[in-house]
Length: 156
Image (cartoon, rainbow, N blue to C red; front, side):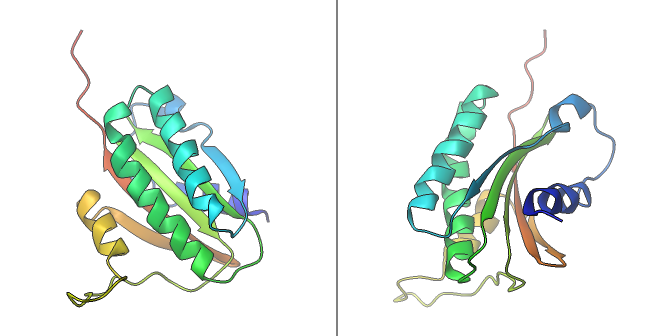
């Protein structure tokens, strides 16, 4: 099974409740990236472009921070396969950012000390998503997802 199908399958397991926008989730936008530092910027550009395409410019900055953290964490696993970064709209009111990698090592949110130079990334993801993030373990890796609320639709 490919990483793309694992990400799609892992994301499908996370779907909740009725969805009035099934057409939005028919095919996630996804990109394969190598485990290299330059992939962080590529992931930010990819997610930002997709959000702008959907007219969700207000979410680009938060999404860039989130995907940067998730991709950086994947790079640190030492995996040698390709990671997959995806973005989709499971509902009209939510955007889901996904990062799938070949490591079964689970991300852990830690309480960073005030003088620490790292360790605050998942806490930032937790704040930006209001706690709406998680991990789906897969047979050959995992998918980490983070959900951002979209602005309320403008009545017509």
